Amino acid sequence: MPFEQHFEKSYPKDAQSIYQAALKVTEKMEGKLISASPEKSRLDARFPKVIFNKTLGERTQLSCEIRAEGESSQVVIDAFPLDAVERKLMFGARPGVTKTVVTWFVAHLEHTLGLASQ
Image 1 (cartoon, helix red, strand yellow):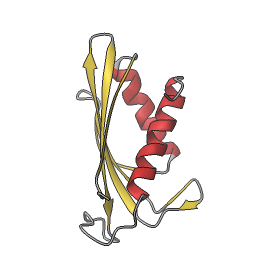
Image 2 (cartoon, helix red, strand yellow):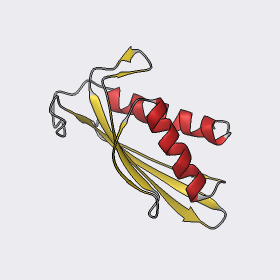
Image 3 (cartoon, helix red, strand yellow):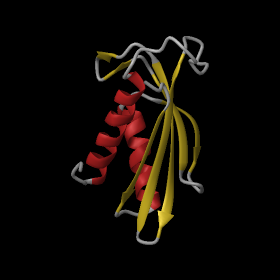
C-alpha cells in the first residue's frame, strides 16, 4: 500500500471559493498551515495524529492546489505521512492513515462548498 496519496477532482466552483473553503477545512481539522498562496490557489498544511478526537497514528502533510478550468476548477491533493520531527516518513507508516486524512479533507471540502459527495 503506498504511503503517499494523490487525489484529483473537478468542481463546478471558481478557484478562489474552493481555496477559501480549503482554508476553512484545514482549520476545522486542526491542521497547521505551512504555506499559503492565494494568488496561486495553493496551500500546504500539516495535520496532527489526532483529528476529530480520533487517533490516527501519524502526522500527515497535505498540499492542495486548485486550478481554474473555465467555469469549474480542478482540485489536486497530494499527501504523505510525517515522523515525530515532521520529516517525510519513508517506511513503517501505518496503513490507511494518509488516505483517511485525504478522504476526510475532501468530504469536508465538498460539504463546505455545499456539494454532495459523489
